[in-house]
Image (tube, rainbow, N blue to C red):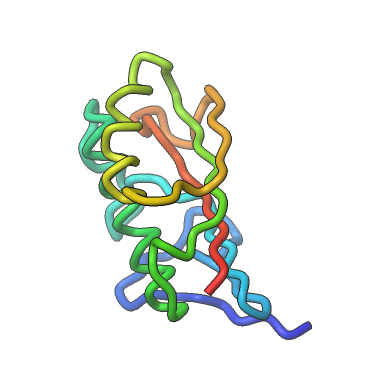
Length: 126
């Protein structure tokens, strides 16, 4: 099965050996996405809602580049640094998935940079 790398315009160089997304057939696998600027610095330090919005906008850009929309997201993997941010994260998350919600899980864990409060990876069928 051939695969295609999804690389939206303006994407910065990843911190590790990965790409923003890979598409195989009609499935887009979006890598774990954090609230990074083009230099891989965490943005919106201390604000889980703003980080979540930044992440979901980044994921949206990836999926649109692959020819889809946020309505095509079928599964999200959500990682939070602190459960205290859960409500703020979910409030923003609900704005991006107003209708039928994708399946998901959410776990608390350490993230790659200390100022990162949330990370989301997605699967979409476009």
